[in-house]
Image (cartoon, rainbow over all chains, first blue to last red; front, top):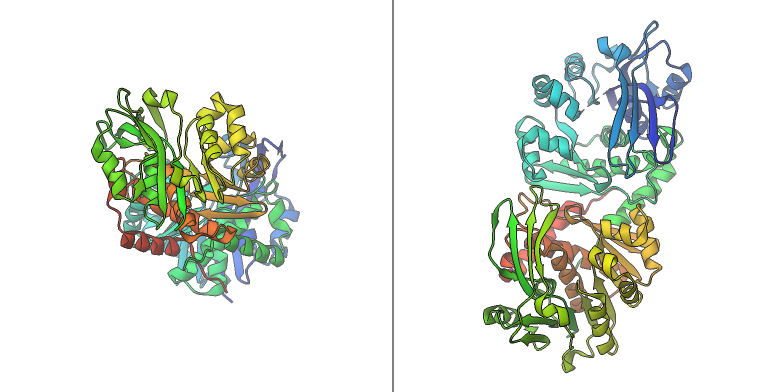
Amino acid sequence: MSKLVIVGTVAFDAIETPFGKTDKILGGAGTYIGLSASNFNVDSAIVSVVGGDFPQKYLDLLSSKNIDIEGIEIVKDGKTFFWSGRYHNDLNSRDTLDTQLNVLADFNPVVPENYKDAEYIMLGNLHPLVQLGVLEQVTNPKLVVLDTMNFWMDNALEELKQVIAKVDVITINDEEARQLSGEHSLVKAARAIEKMGPKYVVIKKGEHGALLFHKENVFFAPALPLEEVFDPTGAGDTFAGGFIGYLAHSEDISFENLKNAIIYGSNLASFCVEKFGTERMKDLSPDEIDKRLEEFKKLTQFKIN
Amino acid sequence: MSKLVIVGTVAFDAIETPFGKTDKILGGAGTYIGLSASNFNVDSAIVSVVGGDFPQKYLDLLSSKNIDIEGIEIVKDGKTFFWSGRYHNDLNSRDTLDTQLNVLADFNPVVPENYKDAEYIMLGNLHPLVQLGVLEQVTNPKLVVLDTMNFWMDNALEELKQVIAKVDVITINDEEARQLSGEHSLVKAARAIEKMGPKYVVIKKGEHGALLFHKENVFFAPALPLEEVFDPTGAGDTFAGGFIGYLAHSEDISFENLKNAIIYGSNLASFCVEKFGTERMKDLSPDEIDKRLEEFKKLTQFKIN
């Protein structure tokens, strides 16, 4: 079985959407990626940090999904990273109300000994130097996927470019791809980003789906049209988790199989947004995922003679 | 061979994009629909009106594409409908600089005798009463497709609802679908619009593709990711023309074949935006369309075992 190392925040979120409001609930990129990837048969470990205030039950939840939590450092006298945000009515944009780095400020990632030979590495959204720190500890990865965001382009561009140069796949949203490349056309943006290092560029467009670029090849996976999007938090991370989870499980990193991974990413993300936070991801069954795959086929597959 | 009646403006456009600016050039929904549908083997006629200022060479262009122009009334002492607009830098939005209805103000559509038994009817964007006037003249259509826009929702909603109640398919953009239905979710919007009459609802999302709804079924066609969109004018009409042209040619109005028609609509629209106005549509070859179909397949088709 393949090994997958996930680095990313394990955190508290407080979320407001037009449909309601949560107190501090389980969140963080590492959490969403881990839960999503756990739907595939793979040995995964999360590398992260939490404070003494982080409930054991959340750690137990991750363990119950077969996620190795040895790499989640617990800083007893520290506080867990906290993010709070309010979504606008259309759910396409949000305001950050509060960000408390807390223990994340001094985070020094440590990959568990048993995972240093992991074949698959998912660098979830975090400071590029933390992402680099993880890369330095793994010996011979087969595929490294990077997720990042505009915050690091604004505040740590040089370090970010160092990470980008070392990864196989980058996942990034459309506006971020434009910012990083200086190109408005996503086709040109992807081409420019490929020149920075990654062989594959995945551009996430939220409710408008995701594009996979590789040289002259393009593949597109739509988001599933849903009756209601309840809470978009974690959708991008869940997409990334489904993407790398599927690849690690199938052990095939051809372009043809990356297409499938994009479909599984969209598949998993379509569940994530149906409930607040990680709620929907906690109790997802293989049957539900299979059924949704059929919906994706109906949505996109056609036969023209 | 099937007969197709197209009602829509045949007009002058003056367009500004970040890439340049045109004088008065050939435009109009009827023109774009006609040129697009002419790529399929079908007998089509445009029902419209122009002024004495409309160049014979434009009429000759339509005739050369096997489009019957008997239904294009020429008001000798009148002036042709004129629209002028300026696109913003991202090409996703535009300002209307000028609209001169001219001969369109008193337009009374007359379907040529030979086309009253047409099986396929495309009601291009125009006043709903004009669209109704065409429907009253055709005896036994097999499929009626309606395209409309927010302007009529704002200014002639009751008349528009009368047309909507009589058609089989409505094509409309995402914001218009939300306005017409009062629903933000496109799934709910489509369901609400189906209740107004149409069996099929096509929601156009511009660069983000198009959705086809029918009861519990949804199909999605992406827009082809292009290096550069030069001028979006007429893309929606070209989409509609490809859609109905393919259906009229294949004479199959099953949901499965409507999927294919959506793909052909996107296919044709992807050419339209590559040059100013109708320029790209004038010299399109069957070979180019076939090749682009292959690109659409590569873009969307996958195989998961």
